[in-house]
Length: 190
Image 1 (cartoon, rainbow, N blue to C red):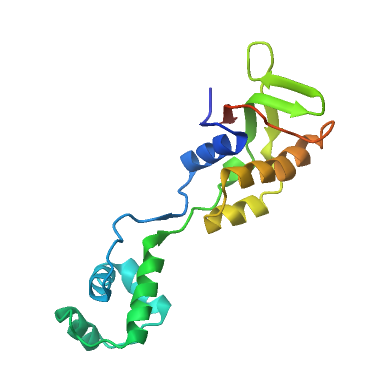
Image 2: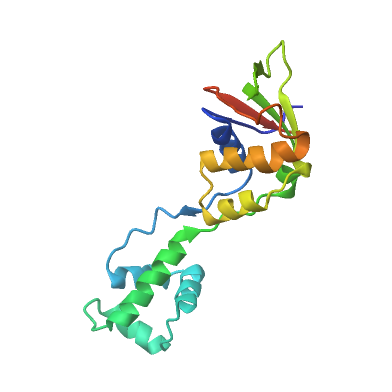
């Protein structure tokens, strides 16, 4: 039975597609578009998440003060409070990434596409050649997960770290390193 598969124009893009099919990536909520402090405060006080963001940002005012601010958009709010509201709003707009699940880190990866090590370059995952099989459980996932959680795991970073921290940890350096110079890749997780 085939497992989830990621596809892309590079190994890193295919890995990213696969990972995003398994867990939520860090992203900004499209509903957080307010510019004025009053509109931001109104949106924040409408959810538990928003109240938590206000508290985390350090807004320490009474309920009556909040009511006064919300009842009059022209209310004279100190700049420091407006800055706190804006910070809370920006923080509430970001949905953190889910951690990379163990079934991914322990999974078996089957890579189809052009694989090169030294002078050996071949198409993998065809009728003539099996995919490149990598045991993810042998890999070191800390750097990949740190970048993922921070929302900074680009396709290029993912490819570089996957080669260095997963492929090499599983099957070694190869003849002269590993390259994936093809124009399309598929990565299946088993």
